[in-house]
Amino acid sequence: MADQSLAPLLALSLTLAAYQLALVLQQRLRLVMLQPVLVTTAIVATVLWIGGIPYEQYRSASGMLAMLLGPTTVGLAVPLYKNAQRVRALCTPLLITLVVGGVVGVSLTLALGWLFGLSETLLMSLVPKSVTMPIALPLADHFGGIAPLTAVIVMLTGVISTTLALPLLKICKVEDPAARGLTLGMNGHAIGTAHALRESQETAAFSALGMILLGILTALVLPGVLGA
Image 1 (cartoon, one colour):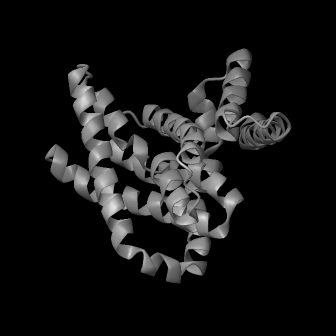
Image 2 (tube, helix red, strand yellow):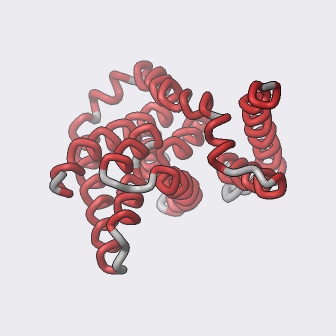
């Protein structure tokens, strides 16, 4: 009984300690590739493997962290509210970018999946890769995908997209906060938005908007595309 009561605390402590270590590594080495989420995952996975702890047990014990994903996403509305006037001024190009980016992203994923002969289960796990975790997991479940696999794919998409987007934005000399934020939010979702928060409130506002609206658009359009 004592072990069961300690399990959630141990899982929470392990995750937070791994994340703090990941932050220290990134701050000292200053490498974009050392995204805290990716490093944290690697540390936790290593500890679980060494300790022989099944992932299902860790996932159950760390349920509190998963539960906080939704409120955390909602909390991103704060910088959005503070920059509402700027968002309204760019409403038309913003909507065009979201629709085109969303359609192209989903279409390319489906086309490449079918081209390489992925099974329907793997394809449905892959399709929600470009939306934030609280939306991607229910979508994967609904369409018959594997939610844990989708979670890994979403995380890797966020890390890789953010890592690639930053040097590309620099090469293309994109300095406008709205353009940078929208790029990070639509491609790197939560991880991209976390980086946008470090740049400026305006960048974070557009990143959060891009992440949230792309998730809503995908949730609305995907059932029609897949015939569900």
